[in-house]
Image (cartoon, rainbow, N blue to C red; front, top):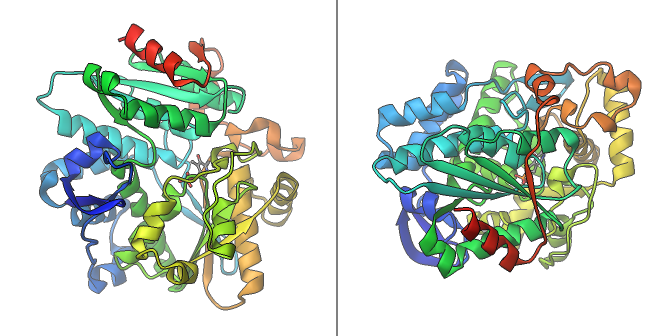
Length: 435
Ligand SMILES: *Cc1c(COP(=O)(O)O)cnc(C)c1O
C-alpha cells in the first residue's frame, strides 16, 4: 500500500511509515494513493462471508503485501473478536450496533486493529513505542484496552477535564501497567492540539518513538470500512439492496471510512452526517465555507469536535469538488433538547435504548426519510452502549439497560490521573520527566 499526503499528492510512503508517522510532516493526512476496486462478484456474494472473511478481504485489498496474508488474517480475527449486528426496528429502518467490543464503543474496531498492526510492524525494534492519544471520551478507553499489556508499548491518554462521563473516566484511568491518563484543563480540541504539537517538537521526536492513536491514523480508518461491508451483507440477506447510512459524526473518521468503502465499490445511496451543535460540516455543506469553531460541550460528548480532522480526507476522496461531496453526503444538526426527546421517542416506539450519539443518528435518519421518501433501507449507526451514559436516561429507560460485566468490574477500581493545564510546555515537561 502506498499513501500520499492530502497536502502533497507527490509524496509516497508505505503503510508502515504512515502508521508510525501518523501525520505527514506537511500536516496533511495520509490517503491511499490507489483506492482498490472490489469486484462486483464479491459485493453480490457478501452474505456468504463472515465478518472475519469480509474484514480480511477488504484489509488485503487496501494494505496489500505490507502485512503478509497469514499475519493479516490473524490480526483481523484477533482485533474484531465481537459482533456487529443489524437490528431491524421498523420497515426500512434498522440500527447497526457497533458497541459490542470491550470498551463498548465502535472505536474498538479502529483501536484494536491499530494496536495489533503496530505491534506486528514494530517486531524487531527495541525502543518503546509511545502512543499519544487525545480523546473526547471513547477513543481513550478503546485505545487503552487495545494496547493494555502489549509489550514494548506505552499509551498516554489526554482527555478534557470534567467533560467525559464517569464510566468513560474509569475506562481511561484505572488500567495502570503501560497506560497513563492526563486530564487537561481545556477542551478536546486543546487535547488534540497538544498531541499534534508533540509530533512537531524536535526534542520530543528525538527522545521518544512517538505515534498517534487518533482517528487520523490510517490504521484506525481501515478497519472502520469493514462493518459497512458487513452491514450491507446483512441487508442483502434481508432482501434490501438500496441503503442510506446515518453516521453520528464528530471527527468524521467513521463516516470517512464509510465513504472510502463506497469508493471501493460498496453500493450506498447516501451517507448522512449526523452532528450535534458542533456543526462545522453541516454549515460547510450549506455555505461551501469550512469555518471551524471552538467545540461546544453537548450530551453526545464524543462528537464535540469543532474542527473535524478527517473532513479533509473526505474532500480528498471527492477531488475537492463540493458538488460531488454534496451528492454523497447530507448533513443534519440537532440540539441536546432534540437528543433527549429522541431517546424517549426511540424507546416508546421501538423499546430500544439509544445512547445520545445514536439518538442523533436516528433523528438525522428520520429527517432524511421525511425529506427524501422512497423504498430504501435506512441504517443508523449505534456507536456506544447506552450504559456508558447512565445519567442520560429516565428511570423507566435506565431499567431496561443491561450493564455488561466489564463495566460492573470498573466501579471498584482506583483512578490514577495526572492533571495538567492546556499549555504545551507543561505537557512537554511532563513527558520528558516521566520517560
Ligand atoms: C468517536 C465517537 C463518535 C464520532 O466518531 P467520528 O469518527 O469522530 O466522527 C460518535 N459516537 C461515539 C460514541 C464515539 O465514541
